[in-house]
Length: 183
Image 1: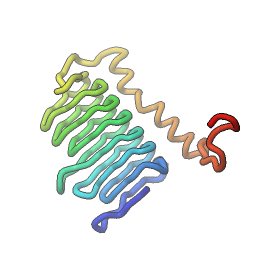
Image 2: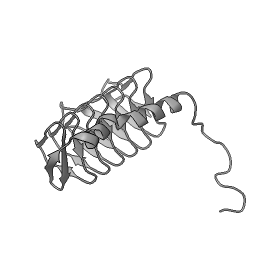
Image 3: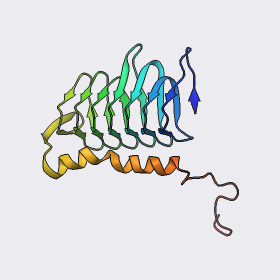
Image 4: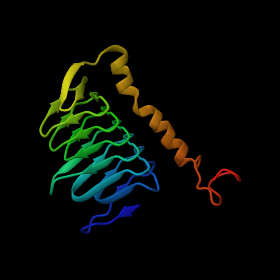
């Protein structure tokens, strides 16, 4: 659902995918090849939200901001299911794990990774190419070798899936929800 607010209408680039149950409100921009999945809510009613090229904002993610500030999700970033982002910057190819919380003015560096369930407090900076975990999140180690490769390539599977959705692989089904006799 695309909703104008305060004279601002979300902008979705050609080649981006926004699921029919996602909600974009106000000053939101979704770049080419990016995806916003089912149940995600991006509320640009107080400030702005930018989703970079090929970034993936997965199911049930919430993004919001302080008044007149923004949330910036970098190119090729992955925001996993159930995460909440508020007035923060997520770097290029960074991975925010499932159910993470990233609070006001925090910065997640390029190619950094937050472990699932982490809470990044206000104004915290996670350096590029590092893993952080915990509540509050603390830097655990530098990412190298296979771990860094995984972070760098994690958005590619959702980029491929985005293409499949845009090519019509998914269609709404009308009619009974379950086979006869199961419900």
